[in-house]
Length: 137
Image 1 (cartoon, one colour):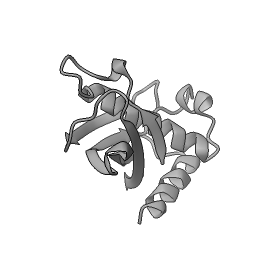
Image 2: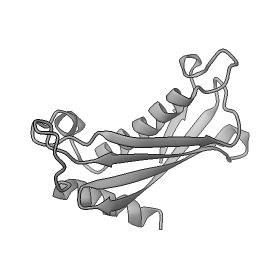
Image 3: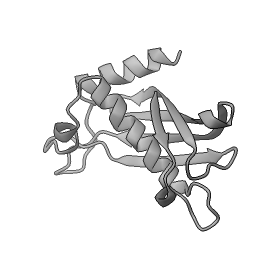
Image 4: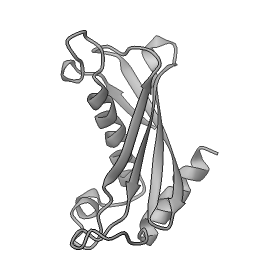
């Protein structure tokens, strides 16, 4: 579970959370969960042998969120194949009676960053995926 306050910079001209900002918040929750599992994100994101780019993302907004709202992001994972996985996010506004404000999904593939060919996920990533898959079952 990741907690985040909506900042002014996260909102659009109408004063609601902008869609790219919501996806950024989801990615912050992803990084936080990696660190919580003992994965060094500096090494993880600069690994010369392995990269895990995003290949698909979507988000559905169920209610608006505004500057100052307290958000809680819960994630769950699912390994789709030996070289790809998705992370699903539920974003709740706790200052609004714990109402779900958005749901998102971000899919990653594992590749060799030099030749851009797919490769199996590293063992530490498979373990992380299994941990968060079980945590939300």
